[in-house]
Structures are given as C-alpha cells and as structure tokens.
View 1 (cartoon, rainbow, N blue to C red):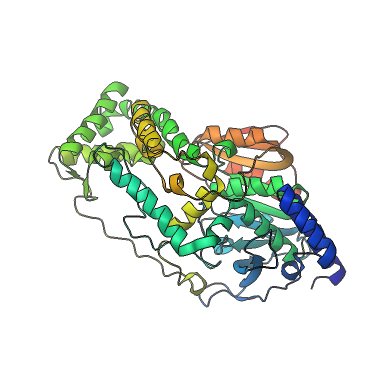
View 2 (view 1 turned 120 degrees about the vertical axis):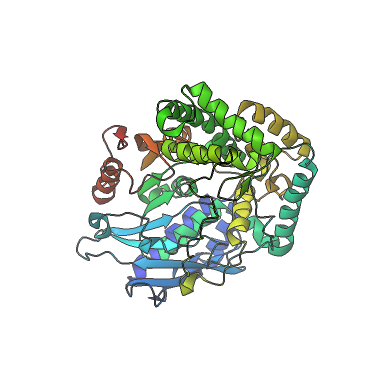
Length: 508
C-alpha cells in the first residue's frame, strides 16, 4: 500500500510536469487552476487500482484493473476515459526494482496481454526485478475503444497508384477521415501519442512509482521517446526495440519502407543467384531480378494462381516485406514461377486457416475496425500538419516514387486518410534529449529500417545502440542472444554498453 504523503508528492510532481508540456496559453491557465484549486490531476493520480484476475484462462497472478485519465489534459475536470492496465508482479519482492511498461507498436496495437505474451522473451533475471505492466493505449482495445465504422475494404491499406483508380483512392481516404470524424467526434483530436505518454505518467503515479522502465517495440519506440522527451525525470531504463526515425514519423515512415526495400531486393537477388541450382531463378542477380519482374508483368495480364489465391502484379509487389528474409523470399518466388509455368506449386490449394485463438474475456467486445481506426486516429492527429492537402500532390509523388522504388514506392507515397484529417491541438514532438536508453535494431528490418534506428539513436544522445548485423525481420527481442544479453544487463543493472555494439545474426 502506498504511503499517502508519498502519493501526494508524486501527484503534485506529475501535475507540474503536465503543466510544463502544455502550450504557453494552456499552461498559464492550468497553472492558475492548480494554484486556485490544487493539483488538477489529483482526482486521477490518487486512485488505487482495483486489481482482479484478468481472465479464467490466464494465470491467477496476472491481474487487470482500470485507471481513469482525462480525455483532454488541458481540461482535467472534464470528461474522463478508461485505460485498461495489467500486472504480473516481480517474482522476487526482495529484488524488485519497480515497474516495466510495455507497448507492442502500431499505433493502435493493444498491449494489455504483453506481460504474459509468449512472444515477448524476458529472462528470469528481468522478471525478478520488475512488475510487468501492460496497457491498452487510449482508444485501443479495452481502453475506451473507438470505431469509425469502417468496412473491410476501407480497412485495406495497400493501394497501388493507377491513373484509372486514383479518384477512387482519393474517395477512400476522404471517406475514412469523414467516417472517423462523424463516429468519434471531438474525442478524435485527443487520441495522440503525447496524450498516451501523459496516460503512462498517470499510470506511474497511480502505481506509486517515482519512475518507470519501459520496453517498446516498433511504434512503441516512438511512444517511448516521446515519454522521455516530456517526462525525462520520470524515465528509468528504456529499451527501444526496432526504432522508427522520430523526425520521419508520419508519412515518412511509409516512404522509408519503400526506400529500404530496394537494397533488400538487391541483397536477395544476389543471394538467390548464388543458389541457382536450388531455386532456379537465375544464375546472376540481374537474371533473378528479371525472373521476378517477368512474373509481375505476367500477373498484371492474368493473375497467377499461386496456391495462396490469385495474385495480380500489384499483389506480388505488395509482398515487398518478404525480401527482407532471403531464404523465405527465394522459396516464395520459386513457387510463383512454378505456378506461372502451369506447374503445381507446393501449396497448390488454398492453405487451411490456422485456428484463431479465442481472445481472453478482458480483450473481447472490441469493434472489428478498432486497430485500423486507431492507426489513423493517432498517426493523423500526431502529424496532421505534415500531410499535403492537395490530392494531386499524392498523384505526383506516387508516380515519382514508383519510378524510384518500383516495388513499393507508389504504395508508400499514395494518398492516405491523413490528407483530410482535422489538425490536432498540439504539434508533433521533437525528440532531442540526453536521457539514457538502449536501442536494438536488425540490419534488415522491413518495417523500421536500420536508418530509422540510427536516427533515433542520434536524437537520443544518451542512448546506446545494438545492431544485429545481417539480422532479418521486424523485432529483435528473443531472436539474438547477444542483443538480448545487452538488454538484460541494462534492465537489471542499469549499465549501458560502453559503446555501440554490433551483434552477428546466426548463419545457416
């Protein structure tokens, strides 16, 4: 149980930090309110979580609760929303250091289940020291979830540029923006990364902690960096796995994916050429590339029945992330080639769908479009001023980038709902601080390219970076013992590597 005096001091300090992160006008108003009425966040930070077992199917030690936070931090006395949190207590009360919060990425990814997610690999040395804290960000999952009422087609993101369909793509982007505004209303402008960071600090205060540690994946690295920028004195040990470039957050993230696909495709073609006797795609990198583009051209004329369903040329190009894992990509293209030649591919019939696990009770009854709606809500609100408003600019950019980056350039630079989003109340966060952090990055990450991790490292001047040379795939955690060891040492001792490290991916 928290000491009331300690909790009060924590709440007052949290309120002071809150005021410092507002615009000058709202900060002055909040300061006046604080002086006249006391701590404006006290009604939230003084609450005690009512912990209960998350679900009958989850471990009895895995507990869930709900925390109240203000929808609008410039109006703490206004509407409140629920944030769902979870906890798995440290296995050693004697060695417990504090709390370790998680975010899985997105934006829009639910994180409530992460403390018991088997895909999150944490050694016993870490779980002895920390209460593992999951949470669904505002608007997501069990945290006052939003819905824009999007249809399945409206939830489809990959839209290649074609002159004859561009008007439909513009209408799609406008429709998503309009539906979200109509369904979510004024709440929409408060679904931002900065407000999620503020929610994290309320969670910290509610849990009675002076500081939090953190493990964030993908977009979660950006959220972590924003928290570090807004609440540096509340930041303990932050591990950022597969980091996004903070200055390119928004439209630049999509474009960075297209840019990074070219080198990955070249690397793959060289690898496959060296193994021509196995895959029969070409004896030289140029021949391998020709084989692939011939398949795309053939599929443009008539879809190829690949065993995964008919694939058009655009469907094949949309699979650009496959080329970041060279062996898997070579196998896939070899099967496409067989199908295009009329030979039966290895998976000639539609593969059986894997059984979808039944979500635990605390994760049910979420709108089917919640993750998609949350992606646009957060991304567009965070970066609303950086998206061109003229649809013709997207047409020009898509044409230009398809020529530059043939696999994915037009997908990345095509129009998105953010072109029609209402501008948010706050500007995007500039990340530039000396707070300590550890960044983990695969060399061949399809979603957050190595250059993005390096940019995050430069912005976080107190950080160290561990690069997995020849590391493939998105997310390092659990895939490389060398990188995992650095994270474990940092989380358990606070010691960052003396200098940036390079770990080698396993060969084979």
